[in-house]
Image 1 (spheres, rainbow, N blue to C red):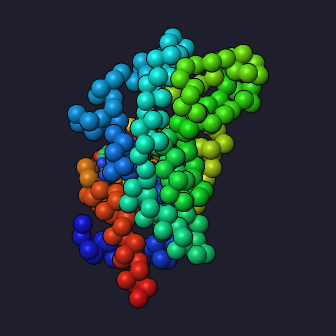
Image 2 (cartoon, protein in one colour):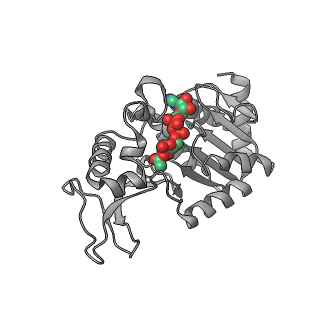
Length: 251
Ligand code: OAD
């Protein structure tokens, strides 16, 4: 990482009033949660997302989707937020008089567990269940719920409260994410490959609205060429170094 970039980015954080951090699976990689599309370890290189993470797959074989997601939930429960999440929580705590909003595609809940708030989970969460028909029923996903069951209110199938392939995002959550992206004065993008729409549009909209965009990813992505800073680094390393740089600037 170039120290000049880090110094400039730290100055931008100090001057900003509204900061957005938009995160993807790469941020949780250091927690031991595999990403979706990285080489041999990517989840979608091992299993067909259409089978285990799509609405068609769920309607065809709810038990298959349920058991695959339950395995993922168990892994998430066993692991914890890493140094990157913790550095972001510290950044928030030190941001007096600023608004720091996390917009995440991750379903692991680690941002909230680390202490960030608000967190807009645009792809939902693996920790909650809801009624497929949205009758209003929702519950925490206890690990004792090992198979699909009918909604106690309306009898429709109960399912994990996350966005499956083929489904729309929650309109209210995405509208809030869009608004924050457009009104921010600094936008961080970390650990995402920008392959899943519409979430991947948020940094593009932010950039078009004149918001400086900083990307943190060890590998180039489609955003790299347009980002104001494209930092080739792991997330934990970058946010830890950024926190230290801000402290150093404050003396
Ligand atoms: P991907 O697996 O598509 O991309 C992960 C990105 O993280 C890649 O660009 C990696 O280079 C980068 N990366 C890996 N290790 C990193 C590290 N230590 N620090 C920073 N970056 C790192 O994951 P997403 O872009 O999040 O959908 O995937 C988007 C959506 O596709 C997910 O939300 C999920 C999936 O299907 C749902 O769960 C609905």
